[in-house]
Amino acid sequence: MTSLPDERDLASRIDALPREIEPARDLWPDVRAGIESRAAIAFPQRRNPRSWRIGGLVAAAAVLVVTTAVVTARVVASRAPAGDQAASSPALGESSVIAVAAVDQSFRPTVNELTAALAASRGKLAPETVTRVERNLRLIDDAIGEVRDALARDPGNAALVQMLTTTYRQKVDLLRRATELAPAP
Amino acid sequence: MPGGIILGDMSPELAPAGRSEPAVPASPPSVQASPDDVRRAQAGDVDAFERIYRAYVGRVFALCLRLSGDRSAAEQLTQDTFVAAWERLSSFRGDAAITSWLHRIAVNTYLMETRGTKRYDARIITDDALTLDAVTLPRDVEQAIDLEQAIAALPPGARTVFVLHDIEGYRHEEIARMTGLAAGTLRAQLHRARQLLMKSLSR
Image (cartoon, rainbow over all chains, first blue to last red; front, side, top):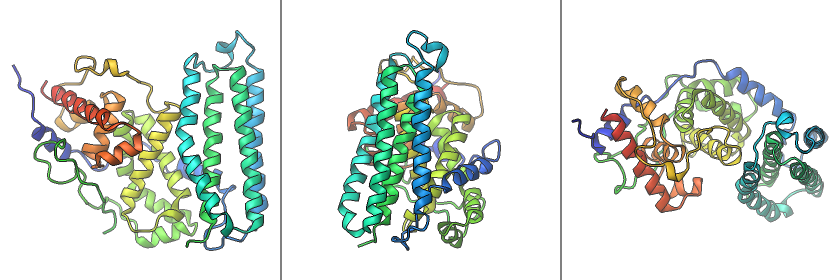
């Protein structure tokens, strides 16, 4: 009969765990690719909050991302006739409703918090900045609505759930960057 | 000190006996990144950010591996963490160690992904299955590897709480805030994790 190690043994084994574990492959090329793929939607830094020299690029990139989401949602949904979902998409089945609710629930607090922060700092932003941010937020909200409509038609489509997550992230990212544009008090 | 990690204190009533300090000491990473690298990266220097990545990828990957329990998922999570860190560099003020800043981003990324898509946790086990006999844990391997494997085999909820509290040193209230778990659930998950691990290590 073996005795259970006590919590002191467990603690000492935890202390002995390695602090660093190297991944089996170099992840930097993928990290760099991820950075560069998002560089196109970079906002100006705080030190120059009123500069919108790349504002056109920002707006174009946001439109591109959102348009892509909407078009993809429509295409994916149109390829999924009722009764043939398993053949056309990764099936989530009944859990998709739960998954969509989880997506909504996970992003709502952050979106609400950032929306409130943006509203509080609205007066510190240039009017054209506010206009651009609001325009892009409307685009993203429209995209979220489109994806949700597509999900209503094709509730078993995991790709649409992932797209909803991505579009929400886009909204959080835009809100976060917009709030960072406000000069520090 | 570059690479120093700032950890919260542990709740004495639930910390493993004999634990007097956080599990991860403030030891420097094997590769150093200078404070100047942080400033350069904040100014958009990707090469400087690569030096930061090289200095801290081992620590971030270790955390991601323990949180996800899966090497492939940990690689993806590590990538997502560093991409998110690049995007949020302007918010890093240097008043905390960059290690703890990166760890916080990794934890948030993991929690957001698991909440939204269950991408990193395919092995969802309901509370009903959270019994000592419901989980098959490894045996007959070298001690540290044994513990790593035992951690990976924990049910996802218990694993997350155990890694955050006992390994990363987050306080109960911090974990509750990050995960949305009620205090009682959090304590139960932590207790179950320790019981499962001690049972595994006794084999």
